[in-house]
Image 1 (cartoon, rainbow, N blue to C red):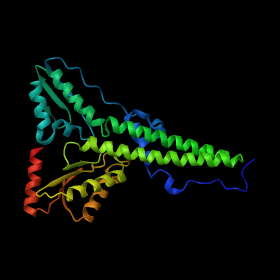
Image 2 (image 1 turned 180 degrees about the horizontal axis):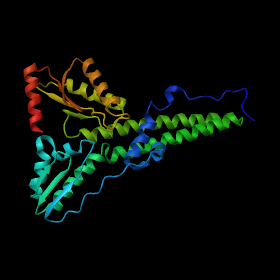
Image 3 (image 1 turned 180 degrees about the vertical axis):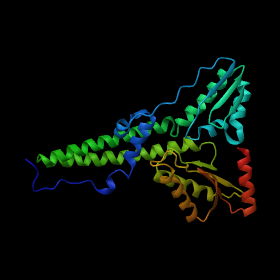
Image 4 (image 1 turned 45 degrees about the vertical axis):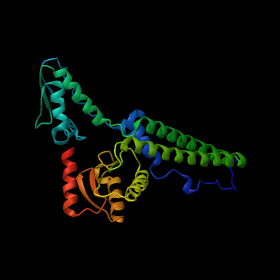
Length: 299
């Protein structure tokens, strides 16, 4: 018999996961091997590019063509640095062609091809979160899923007239979601450390949800501004939005980053589509421009 005279209690809005929390985790899980969505399963499969031809120890081979994800730019590297390194390490001649193929020739083509294929694989499946970040994200996602299942059970209990069981399960749902949010915060800090442990003057937001990234950005930016230092330029990397749902036009991290920089009155300039330089210590325009050029040339 249904609970006719007692409406089923609902979760308070602030107890539910933040907008996009569960959905983005599911999307991240799919991106890391968690399985394709129903939509992906229904769509006709695209023809896969032909595998790279096997490379002998000597001779010539052509790889590609490579499309999307900036793969060619990853192979070339900043100022051609990565391409030169491949040539030096393998002793081969490596050329990027106008049709987005890569030609390799020399006495050790197998080594050069292996290096290039590793770069391509990393570009297609970058490790944004690290081992610890992934573990914590997975734990948070499991809690969200358990909370959803527990909530459904609570509603079934209310429908059957068992209000005591319904309230007990509803309270458990709230506790699970509270713990999941806390675990997500742990994951965010682990991901931040994974992405940004090399320098306090470089902040990379990849692998973070928008609110997580902005909270940590403001925290670390405030700490930097409180230091008694001068002449610093900060590189901020919100990303260009290649992985955003709907593409770059729907990117959220970059606009949110720019909003905070404007609120704090900090001068900034675009370094590339996915990063910007920030004038942290009120350098003159000429000094800021010179420092940005110095950083760019050092890449």
